[in-house]
Image (cartoon, rainbow, N blue to C red):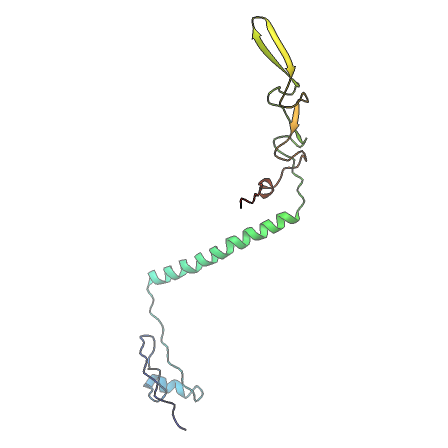
Length: 156
């Protein structure tokens, strides 16, 4: 059987024999009988100290967390989108309207002009209604989810 062109010898501290099929060390020769005719390099156990094991473990855990957290949040967002939102709005207590802060819900504003003189006029903020549409829920009475509250604007 003709041999292939000469393969350069590769030396490594992890190999007990060079990567060349023609020369094998004694330990590789004993393993050769157990394998097929093609030869594989013999690899011995790597000596690892405690710091290396800790560093590898921290790296693997960091990668797992780096992948796991976004996947967890993505599934939670998908599950929340499937559920119906029935939570009442906090600012308006589910009514869809908020009391006007200028007239405190009366619909009119009293202004003291001086002395005993007072002027009562219709509230310009709520047009005399005494209440305004809730700005949080836009009058629906349902508390919007966090991402639903944001208004996305295209600034281009």
